[in-house]
Image (cartoon, rainbow, N blue to C red; front, top):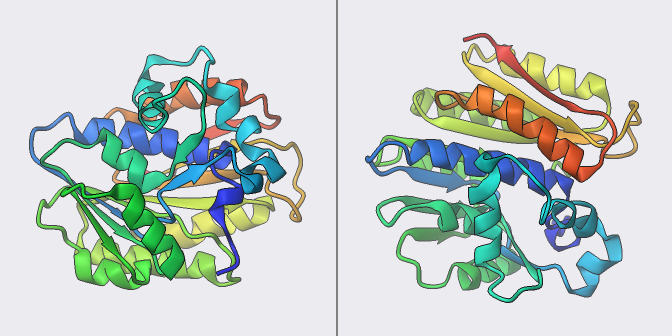
Length: 276
């Protein structure tokens, strides 16, 4: 694994992804029944953004650092509260990865299953999650883990699929994994993160998702760079399968405000890959 998220923690892609993750979890909490969150590419869990790696790129300052004190819609308050929870001091020093963020938002009766293949990252994740009895850490391939953990015993919840997209065939692997997971657990909520470099690649990804035959796929995108330059990360997206009730309207309100606070070019988009 060449990708190290410590260089990118809290960047615009994390802000976008984690804000939506928090919104989905808040909707899951609207019902009393317990739920599971399954994170297939969990990472190290907690990142020190004061360290040399994060300081080298400056991506946190242009990401969460931009929105930490911005005037944002109330729906984003749980997300910001989860970040504040890992920063007991006044200054921002740490940024939570998706498993720690999810755990901060979950209730005592909910459960987290976090998968991380890289041994060093898996050890760091176990340290970050501590002895929280709601959390399970599995040092294994996240795609293969979907076969073992779906459907979850709670019968409701969220699967986050967020690979680094280092391998050329990663997009097709994500689509195949979703199709297989959905066949095992068709009522679950799935969130698939993807980078946006060339527009043509994003359109192809959506077409491949549509070809799975899975209905109710909502695509959310944010673009921080104008134009279509395939050599750089121009933006990113998240496709939500079986999106919770009313979340489409919330995203249409929240994402433009988030994009404005990030001071990016481009814009945001919320649209159906496959109609309701």
